[in-house]
Length: 495
View 1 (tube, one colour):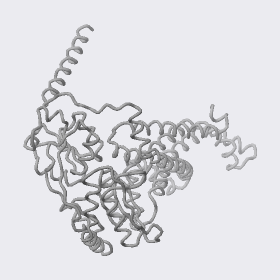
View 2: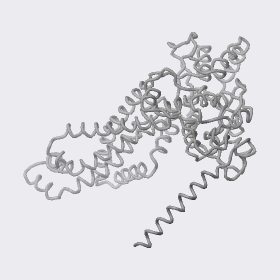
View 3: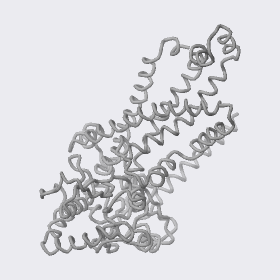
View 4: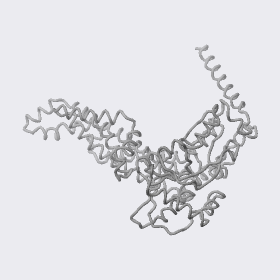
């Protein structure tokens, strides 16, 4: 025992020493030439032009693609990557908030920005190019660049819009990339947002923003869920095979950002120290960001409640088919269960939205409810079947002997006993369904989780919004189960 303890202590000591050496061994970064090395990791946004550029120009470095800027900054501060490669205007906003970061190189590569349209578009692409030329000649484009890209703290200007028009322009964006698309006063704002809203007004259409992450935006465009996409998009050969792009409306640069301590050959990371009050104010009170969470909470509750009801009814129906005497009905029920339990839920949700219902006008909320009802039904149907079969067959025979029909015997004798058996497991699945709704952001539904992502993208606070929604999800799950307890008889709750 003593020898084992000594080995554990020795292993721990070696681990600590090696970790300390790794930290102390972090060499200073001076320029871009220091990046093309096997031990360097470059953080980029996934599926962006910067990712392609980094792989081509720094082939020896490790490339770490992530979905949003906030997570990239967390990687950088935690020492899991050495630099992040982002648009220069975005970096200017970031450095104002984060004093522990600095430019490694502010002018890495020139970038040209365009708007995206469906492949071979014949409706909006030519009109957008005409509109672009007009605002360039009128000096409006230059004013927009000065407003959003040369200084921070500006707000959306007023200009006449066709907000009452029956014709709409569906605009795909992320609202997670300051200063191009982000939330300001709980409304989409930024350079690209102003551009698209002016274009909609020029067309005489009402702008409708379809907000999702970047990969979801690309998928939504392919599925015909939007008329245009605008989100600091740079044209690549791969994208040109799937989408049509406008003329360039912005020429800017991409920059490399790293920890200030890495450039000054220091070891300690000067993280900004904010207290609970400051973080609470920045994430919830400032700009009334709590309204985003409130709106997201209402969407989450709506999807969770409707999916629970729909899934329970679907599960009962599938259970009936599963226990049918007809082989074809049992086969169909088994197929449904295998399909919806065998495919990852997020994949199913995206398939339903971007493929199955792509040609319809169904909203993401409707598709979410349908998908979650089918998933929930696949799980609870097997619970119902197992609970029903757990009731001794003699109970049914006794009911029939007393003069009840088979249907009456099932509802008055078998079902109450089955509900007692299935209730504890059903509550667990209900909680799991409530948490499952957090993936609806993949199909442009602004739920509670998506609202926290939007806040994080503006405040660059990696954890506080996540902690807030974690508490909210806990109370949602607890509240739904308590509501279920209240609705059911005491004999079932305490069985």
